[in-house]
Length: 407
Image (tube, rainbow, N blue to C red; front, side, top):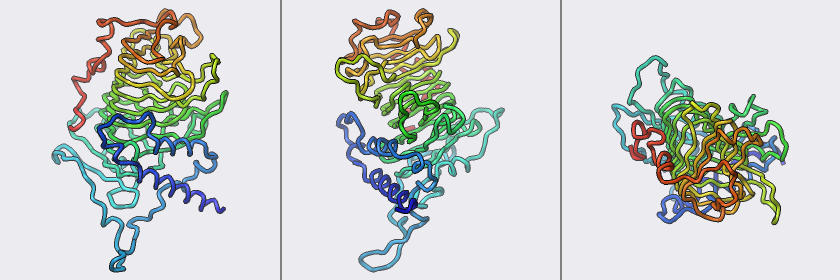
């Protein structure tokens, strides 16, 4: 088959699955299923594709701008955009600008990066402003690498549901000059917000021992960022929670090795953390993944990850975290853990000298993986007083900057 036809067929298939994803699943008040099968299926299929296919710039939406169609009743030609009725959020036009992105050309822009490029830059010396730009993104798969520079603060990316709206790219550490540069979305500005959208890295799943195969879905390096109802899909190093204070609420995060890593100070509330590590044979004690790898290098650094009321599931046998840097700090509280969690729970990066400096704590967790009877000696069973520092937005000083979801 002609390669262009292959790419087009793949694009149509992915688009159809995304757009036809079960909207009832998003709006329902019932508990979310363990796996979001529509987007999870896309991620699994694309991750297994040959890199020669997924690296092609031809993977984009096959619709031309203002695609024409026939009305069946009258036989007249109309625009597909005639049926486009976006539900923009209510905002104060004096402080908020709305830009619209639609792959069919029914908005201001057809790519997310084009919308970002259109936002005026702000001088680093300029005083902070309350003005915000909301980029409203219609349902679809946006196959592009997106970068938000430090000079463009206060941007909101608002999708239509993390099962139906996604930004995806396929860089790896090898192809981008390092893990830190491989993110499909890279955010360097402050006051960033994302709502109801997914970020994916669709590079092939690395084999054991592969060098330079790390593939980041998102790198967040600005301060005061919030993610509401978002999805993060990848394998090794999915979410680069690099630096700054960040808040994650009702998010779905998928990966295998160190799939939440960095040196930020972040609170994760009511999130699903799903391992896609290789299943382990019955009776085997091998470890094939880790949920976190926090990179606090110095005792003076005020950083750490706190997970509150989250759920951990998926496949493989994984650690809750491993000490990427000597003062790594991670706490899991009120979290349900499946039996994929290894009995020892944590790893000191095979460096016993870190046992005296890392801070790994657990508080009132439940599930088969929460049994602390065989935990590593340096793991702390937190009491009420010790845990209180990690249980709410005060951990990230959120009362000073975090805005309500509907703001």
